[in-house]
Length: 183
Length: 236
Image 1: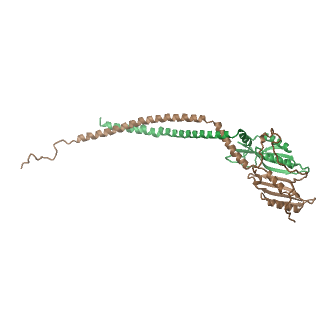
Image 2 (image 1 turned 120 degrees about the vertical axis):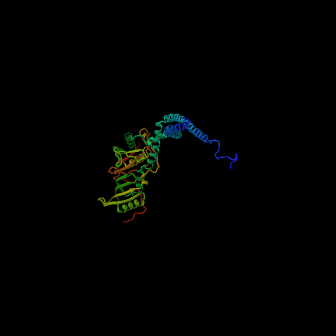
Image 3 (image 1 turned 120 degrees about the horizontal axis):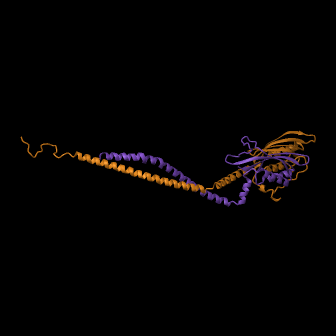
């Protein structure tokens, strides 16, 4: 019997190693270690995020609120073309122009979406739409209106302009503006 | 002859060979080693079990820590920062490509001669900010038209200026059409000017919109621009 004891001991040792130690180490322990490593990475990222967030908050707070408001007015969250038409009409009246026949048109671009908006670049989430209108006024009034729209806080790109004359010195204008907003 | 008693009768030792004792010692060593191995395996099992439990606790602790960190992150704040970044980037692009045709009209007023009049105009700006220009007008004479052609040819920002459809009408004036391309430098805003708060334009006072002085337009059928006299009008 005593001669069998060493063999039994070795058998038990092998059984423990191959039955528990090795599969546990390669299995659940390795899985746990991998998950803990990923958690550590995520926690590091969270720390970096908090640092970055603090930096960005400081930087944003350094910008005057009125400047941020102007930036949002420059590129609003929606097209808001109705208000823009009202603003343009008021501007035209002030510069001696009369506007009419406002219409929002799809951009003539094959890649543009069906809703008439286009994306300037893949990395730039901007949509745009074209606003057409007719105008009547003198050359001076048109120049004043044009300059005012060019210098408006909200960018209005005049993509098409046609001028037809008359006998009275008052001209007819067909204009197509492109306006933008942040998607 | 008898062998003296001092001489051993055989080379075989009279003491028993201790082969059995050697075998017993080897068994003991093997047993000792096997027990040590078994002990190590047992200790390894305990250590593995304890390590696994330790890792489970660490895992649960990290998961809770991560959940807390995740909960402390405001998605609204992240969204706000992302939109602010997008707004800055997009604004940069839009300003770089902002169309301002006043520059073209300033130039047109400068290069148009007093005895040349433009009646209609069509201007289309493409995505690359190159503008296609098409105008029709009339000149007092062929000399005036030739001078106008020279003035356009000397302006490098107006490209491919082609006068065509030249004919004399009943009044003796020379009518023509002009097709040309405008350089993007003449189309894109040069950054000079006063930015006007467009959304607040309704509430703004009259002096918010500052408009430049515009030359008075005479009551004529055609668009007349300020007088510019060419240095020399080539004779036909």
